[in-house]
Image (tube, rainbow over all chains, first blue to last red):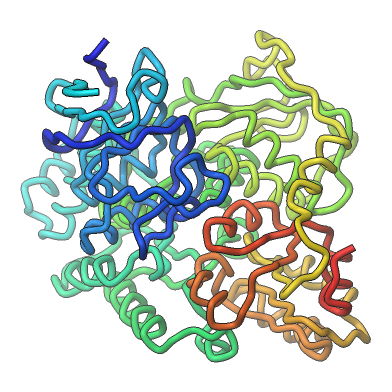
Length: 135
Length: 409
């Protein structure tokens, strides 16, 4: 399958390189936001850069700080291009709205198992779809 | 979303550009979650430390304040700041951090926000009551308010909580809806925790089981009624590890007067948790015997926790820094009752209006050479790994001993 339908979507259409892991996401808990890399040692993306990537992860984790931090990261051009989650929480959605970041969430399949790390994907919030352009 | 006349007026800009901007943000979030309309809220609580806001967030706040408009229309309070200005030098914080904090505080004040600087407002300011709709930030505040108070809040990030303060409402989705408050996971407890770090560890285990924001655990099997501080650590850890916003304890929390009242009778027992599970979780953080500092924070300490801590500090001399955070509401009483003096006479430091992980934890680590950290807060050990610390979870007694000897038992 190369087309995935999301139940929740916001933002504008983007195309980029996917950074994929079956793990959670919190900007405060998981990131070195100065250097733009995942820094929590136990995170499956530890040491990987997230800048300008389309993050595809399982679920939103942790506290409320991400609602501010996506905006702060974007202002320094050190943010992901977009975020895709199997399960979103309110904070990630509020943060994406504040930052003007594209977000898709809620699928009938586990997108972290269905999309290859490094694939080129296109997100279209108007139709709520994620399309794999190239594996 | 269905809007009433007041909301349409805000959206049209008739009540100023700040209210318009706030309600536009709320409509975007509400549509994302399929909210049918807005629900009026009585209080808002904003998480807004400047490590999270950065320069961009502070400029955004200043822009709202510079409009010179009405600001917030309901009681709107704040989570901890990023510093205690009187102790910033001791923490190794730089002037630019303090400058950013001052600018944020000034902007909030001009917007009519009350700078309570606390993550335990349910113990120190005004607790929400059953059925009351509120817009609270800080996950520990939300989970306590939903579960123990029976009030209704989603996790509201800083911009959304401020928007709720400005408009006096929030989109009706998530935990504002009765349909989301029924249990989804049933847990049988086989051992009731005895001290705060065990309560936090239990919350951590349940948070990991739940795994995402939309799971609601119902827990049965407690052999006594927990205290406010015990539930504070339990809930804060659950929210931190699992992004969980609501739990039910059978016969204890207001919506779970029986298992069936929250739908638990229709769920199989999915998990059993005993003492060994709690010990195993704590042991998983026991990375080193030697420690660089001890921190009691996340959440801020209540007056009773400070009383207990002062009792343990009596007559000691610490080899390692011991930092304690509390709220500006509790600190004067801690001073009056001699707790602050006892803790600080032993070499500890009582910090006010801040929380350790919200205060440029990475920069404090680099400035002071702090890495191996002992705490009784399960929430804190979950957060600090990403900031470069090696956090270890132990009882308050063992943490105080570690401050004296430099080694954690």
